[in-house]
Image (cartoon, rainbow, N blue to C red; front, side, top):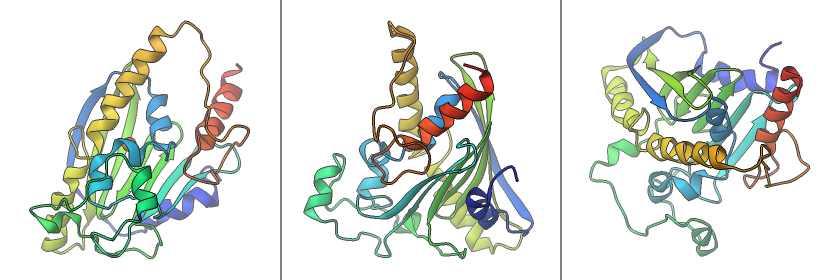
Length: 248
Ligand SMILES: [Fe+2]
């Protein structure tokens, strides 16, 4: 099986047989190699450091249940998953606050509806971001659903084609909710923005590097599904597979 049961499980949560309703499209160019997008979504470590929005509004805080799953056969696909705490502004322990540089106590959104998570699937996760080798991303970030297609565009450029959707049987209210929450995503989304910038910087760094070698330093020696979020083992698994098929 191409996806492996470990990856298919969360894929089937989104594609459960219900007819989809397309809500919109985005398209943008990113000044980085296409594999960097895989790296980004196989790197659970950056989220609480980079994404202020996630942290400030409690969507992902240190201490939440989470996982970074790599397919056990080739290590090429991945699922980054997390479960949001029930309470919208759940108290964060002092210990965890120290881990989150971008945490700001007492910050609130004007429109609280934006953060609402309407549980609609039989899944312990409120977020699953799937990297399906070679060029598909399946995004479920609370109630925003979408697929992204990575189109390589030279060694240091890629195009991203986003398709956002809901289901045909969604109520009008649910569709409004998905559209509102959809502002998290897209080229200028509250969560997408920083990733785009970070990938640009990393690509610049690679270009200026004096060596052809790069090191994935976290969790050394471990390849595949990560034991913790402070890990690059899923990235390592992907590059191991890539090197194999490319004959490097
Ligand atoms: Fe990110």
